[in-house]
Length: 289
DNA sequence: CCTTTCACCTGTATGC
DNA sequence: TGCATACAGGTGAAAG
Image 1 (cartoon, protein in one colour):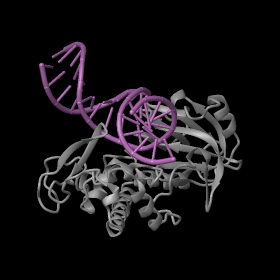
Image 2 (cartoon, rainbow, N blue to C red):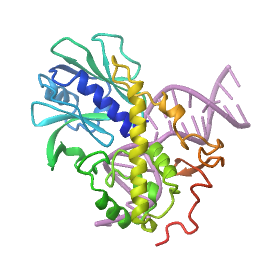
Image 3 (cartoon, rainbow, N blue to C red):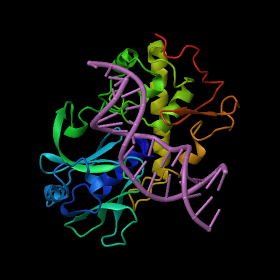
Image 4 (spheres, rainbow, N blue to C red):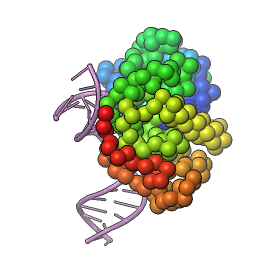
């Protein structure tokens, strides 16, 4: 499940393999992959043909490739999306959705997505100074690694929300890039239960949580970098980091790395939350004031 | 306006 | 063996 660190690994691969190259042809093999590109597959291909990719950019979990036009190629990997750099004409992957070929005859860029929660579109850029971002994601907040991210403003906005801390961490309009896995890991590092009301958090605790989120995602990125295969732009959710370094996610009944208490799994929004019942006690009066 | 819930997907694991 | 069900979960539309 790609979150910020995994998407950043992909961005770096795209920067290396496709920046500066000119699109020869775009082929859409599954309409769902471009469902947010409202003009449809033919227009999608026409907007890309002959355009040169400038660089690879990212905000939170979104990736984009600015073109030598007012547009960018915008992508979200969803649950299972992959952007792969492959030899031209190699056998199609089982869930191949979109294929871009280039005028230099070099490696293709392929969007492969089993569960089809991911998508790709071509959209104009718009100003969200100091950055320019694709118009469809103008509502997404900065991620905590962007220089423009304002820690003080985040604390103010967070305390203003009338919700629980984990819900707030997953709200991409408040802070982007954090998903279910790193939310749980950051909360464990900060010794906070996900159902704590945002309004009860002190400034120092918010700062500690933010630092924990940055720390765990930095460590994940470092490990993702080591397992990165240079021939592919590859998200591999099962490799290295996930096996070795997670403290709570997916570790039900296994001992807490701090105190030894068995990690518990709780249901949360039709999915899972993992936490240590001793390090992260559930608040007595959830959602109060 | 703000917060919460739900639909969208398919491969894998588990239960009867 | 076969069938049903649970689970993985990010996003935006819809509902509350």
